[in-house]
View 1 (cartoon, rainbow, N blue to C red):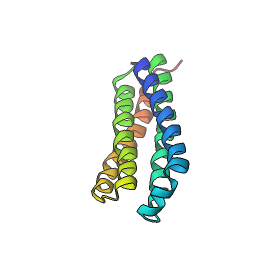
View 2: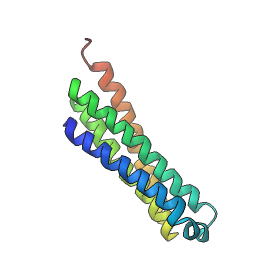
View 3: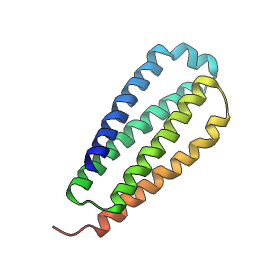
View 4: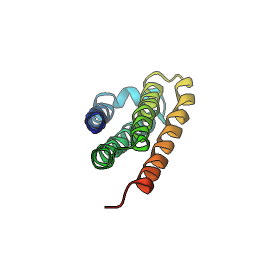
Length: 128
């Protein structure tokens, strides 16, 4: 599974940089027209996507050395949680549809669970 997590980390890292740059440059005027909070919401989505791309990189490294159900579950939580969290903020920022913001906390909860699972996986990993 470590390859899956490494490829996911690469994809989210790429998307984070692409969306961050596009939001800061290509969409700057549109985001500001959508409301004063929208540029910050978009930037938060890109920032958290990058944070969790790095977390997925850690999951890949951990899974390569200490494979476990907990570390894989953590990877799934990060992958799904990042998609829900960041992409709901991108959609909210671009559309102004507040319902997208209502699902953002679901992604955030999955990210929290992912971090807890990394802790559990580390705690239960064999000592070297």
